[in-house]
Length: 186
Image (cartoon, rainbow, N blue to C red):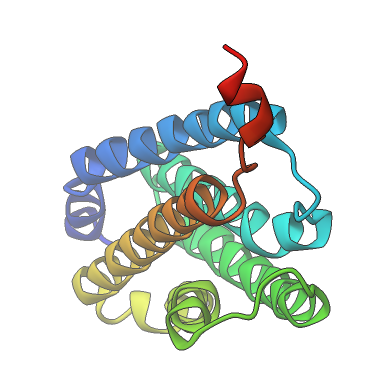
């Protein structure tokens, strides 16, 4: 690759610092929220649903964080990071198969069209772009880097949406109902 290619590659540094930092912060926030939710466990809480719906958000955030680290490293040639982001995409596709199996196996919640879009379709598109993009990177690096950015944002937004859905489900649907007899005795 030419030095011009590396200049184009380096122009994305700020984008990935911002996106990667956001993903890292959201991973931490996800742990805090899940820790707080453990105090409101109810009979309807289902570990299978957590594995199907909460774990993928952390996986997507971690993918964005990892991708950001790969793309912010001072590479001399984009060949190595392109292999790394392709492997990241392939691993994401494998995780997606596991996510689909978990969603189908759990019985606590019946996924709606929106759930399938944000848990499967959008991540599938992002991971597919990551996997296939090295084939275009040698000839169209600028466009490939825009595709990678779109993939990172799709995974970040998917994780945000899925985390929000999980929290609102626990707060509004799965929250314990206060015992009415204890309220009158106070």
